[in-house]
Picture: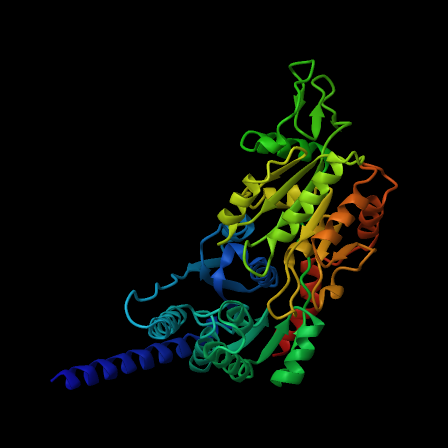
Length: 467
């Protein structure tokens, strides 16, 4: 009896799927200018895929953007009536059974769930998939390929990183699950109609070791990443000073009508904003607070910088703002609290989306701790910093040279001692307009970087239309 019920359910499900496929084929005419973008991760923390969505819309497409909605996406996406955001739910693991069983059940259910969500959408000419997340994101390649076959959609994979390499950070590179994930990615990655990737190093690796031909599409800053005018800097600092003490003025102005932050003040009569003469230097680091971004490097460098000041070196005090959220944030906040810095203030806010580019455009120096699990992807946060003409000190890894040019637009370091020495050198005569920091900023201004929209039209759009 039970077997008969199961057989009936399987037949009913198969018939329903067949009818859904036929219905979508019948509606195929509406699909030519529709794209489904799949992010098996947090949409709000996937700027590249948000940029893809906006670029498709500007080129005449309608877009369905599917992913986890844990963080707020850009307002431009939310306000565009040609972009539909479909929230996905990450299914929890079972609380019983061996770990491998829990993991397997979650992957199966996540795959079926994604299949159902995709089949219920409007038919699309292209399914655009981000690949850089650990399972349950990995099964998305096979699921998207299957839906593409059923609905005559072309699969485009944008390789940000390898999912198996991220798994390897937790389980080790020789773990059976990691090896299985690597085999799966290599096999299913060849099923796509078009492959994009973020670096030339990844393109070469995909070709040599995976048999996949990809096109490099470098991350580029969006147009809203730019230097922040002094008046907007002051408004941002005053806004942040209401919540974070690091932005509050150290002393009250003589005129009670004068607005003063830790960095700027506004004259009540003329409305003119100026930098304070003895202002601290503003250092910004954006991090995901994960194992592949070792925050202890920055913390150790700040300790050495503090000691230099205590030893009498002519250096400014620092306000170090570390943005982002992630699993290790509270752990490191506890370590920061134990340091009792006298000349350094560390602030760890979660900024509103519109305030983040303003902060980067107001800062004096950026620090990047991104190392990459595969060594083949580049940090988007540095791209954003460069868009704001913000020089960067970045920890070195395999392909960083494709973005950061040492001693030209920033500096590359190996550990806390080297980073501390770089901070000492860059801030030794702060805010000297002829110093190394100003030279790096001027180099960035003169580089006339291509913005995302222009780059996308030149590279991605022709590839998609020819696929």
